[in-house]
Image (cartoon, rainbow, N blue to C red; front, side):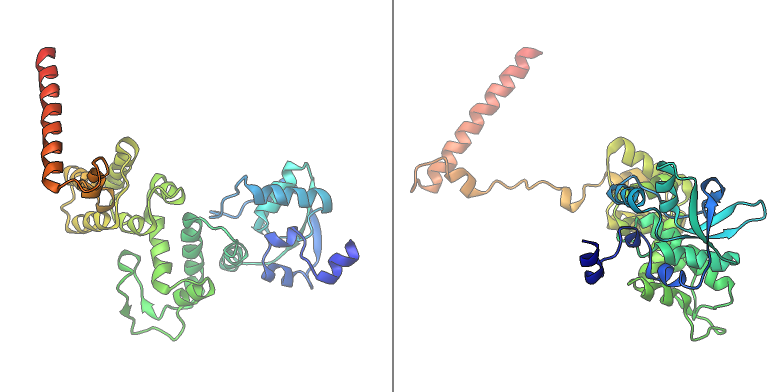
Length: 320
């Protein structure tokens, strides 16, 4: 079996949870085993560790084969090691009671570590909107701090309308990140806008209770108005449409959004929620013999409805 697996060049399960960049980087680096309790999460790590099927598969892989792909870490002044990649492998190992994990210690500054951390996680098969949002923002900020200027003077407050920057260069960090991840530049900034949502609304985006595009527009609201939206979602179970969110954003930017206006807008019936109030003729004719004249059908239906109304009216009158 092992010979057959080798001929087919099948990846190990553990390999499925790492990127090619990570695996390529192991060749010339020294691997050392570090106490699991000395490994700490990356600061503001945007990727969640979910107890899902892929975590169960990773646990089973490590249980059978150990950690095949070393974690990438950097040493901190207090003697601990900050994980740049491998948070899920550490969690799986901890659940199995493993005390030491293979790691590669790299000398990275904050921006280098941030870029590597994002690149090591962003290519996972399933990424939540909130994870993309903070990861894209962290990498873009890191690239900009490294002196890689944007070709456009892109402001997060109005990212949809870039303006030319007189000191711009040919390098556009935002476009580079977008292309690396199969996004458009505009879509990248839409994701980054999600970082302006209050945590509760952002969680609703992850849970698909709020659609992506309306969420982007809601991110322009003040925290106070976002919490007003949240109250409507929780107590009235409404979900803002894109057109409603755009109106809310416009009123916010004009300084005219009040809680009363917000409620009125969210209470409006959306087009896809309007019931079909028209009674189709064919739905009625199926209760009559084939060939019944339309005027006969009309008179009979009208008579039955009149009788129904009279019974209902008399019943309510007697109840009073």
